[in-house]
Image (cartoon, rainbow, N blue to C red; front, side, top):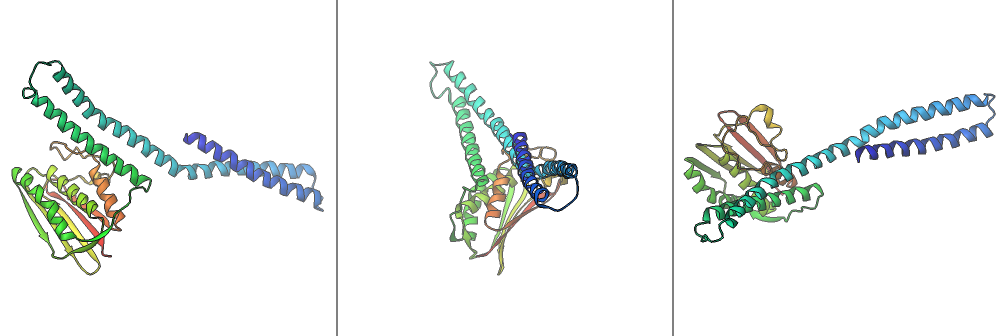
Amino acid sequence: MIKNLRKRFIIFSVLVISIIILIIAMFIFIGGESNLPAHRYIITIVLTVIMVFVGSLILSKVAILPVQVAWQKQLDFTADASHELRTPITVIQTNLEVIMDSPDESVESQMKWLKNIDAENKRMAKLVEDLLTLSRTDTDQQLLDKEMFMLDEAALEVIAPFEPIASKKNIKLNMSVDNKVAFYGDKKRIHQLLAILLDNALSYTDSGVITVDVSQNEKEITIIVLDTGCGIEAEDIGKIFDRFYRVTKTRNLKQTGLGLGLPIAKWIVEEHGGEIKVASTPGIGTSFEIQLPKA
């Protein structure tokens, strides 16, 4: 597709520019008073057409490059999504076959396989939801439903369900949240943003401390999620917001995510006019800092 598009671009450019040059040359040759012989005009036109062709070739390469990059990303996205969907589908199918092979067994005796199916079904539903979110962001169809809400209260609401998980993993969850932090934005998406960062911190912290800090000044709101987990290598820092990218060299804990959370988090922040930064030291921990402008 990209090659055909580039060929069409070159042919169209050459034809259009060549026709314009030929028309101008004809007017000059017919109406001009120059004593130059006709073959000089022909040579000039031929050389001009060659130059136009070379110029169109170079211009097409530059013009098609963004399209080519976007097309390649789309192909990679489709391939990665297919790969991720294949796993839960296979697990569900396998467990269903085990159940179907024992039709006389009670539901209670088959509960192990049914729980596996339920878990993979929820995992696949979450994956499909994230894929739809990212797909809509690519086409600017994902709109924010903005309203004025108290971000400090929203943060506490998000943090509360994670406290039992942190306690079970022997992780201390610290909170430092300013009072009356009013923010104009999409409350649902801010909830999702905080949940993604907390889940990410818990996934890559075996034991230690996770700190959530929400503060404000006159111009902006700052959210920091800091963990004492395994950290991220410098070479991976610039890739963690890529779709389906998961760090495997330094993060040897069980991989539970699909590599879609952080790309969605980045989109949420940027759609609110903010900025997200990450700093990490392997073996010490990772910090995500978000700055959101006040309305």
